[in-house]
Amino acid sequence: MSEQYTAGKRKHATLMTPQALLIIRRLDNGRNWSVVIALYNTGLSTVYDVKKQMDLYSHFWHQVKV
Image (tube, rainbow, N blue to C red; front, side):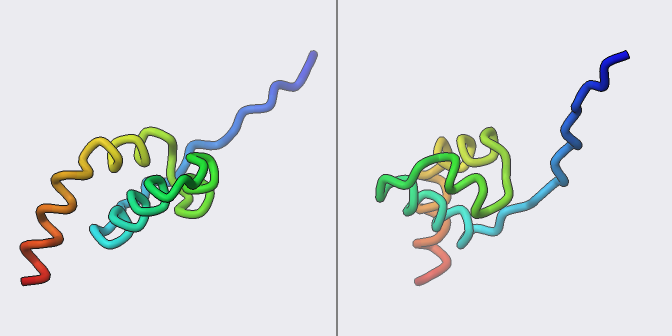
């Protein structure tokens, strides 16, 4: 019998708006996706979703700052 390696599931993580904006800023500055994923301990799909919703986060952040 061969043992098969299975990675455990990642724990659910919720990002706050400032964290999402930092992720967007790091990606815009040319950071590698894998570095950002490891830094915030999230999955690729989470970082991709944050990047996809960049306008929503920026609009929300500008409303809160005023």
